[in-house]
Image (cartoon, rainbow, N blue to C red; front, side, top):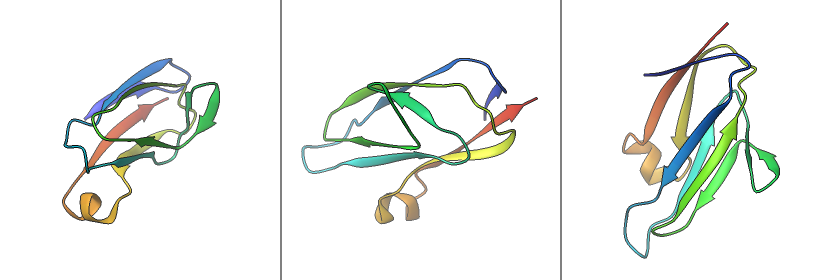
Length: 85
């Protein structure tokens, strides 16, 4: 499990390492990230894409990062991260 602290700067590196037909919708539960000067909780990753997103978590506890495509979510494409005080 990834662990971070409330108010700490965290940089997420995302990679869609699949094939030309596959896409992902990375979704941070409980916190937001900044990507391309926009604050959001969901980031689209097209086929074979890379992105980095910055987070300053403000919501403590155990939360999740998941892919919101039904097949991916059902297949277990979810990770938990912890935000400490």
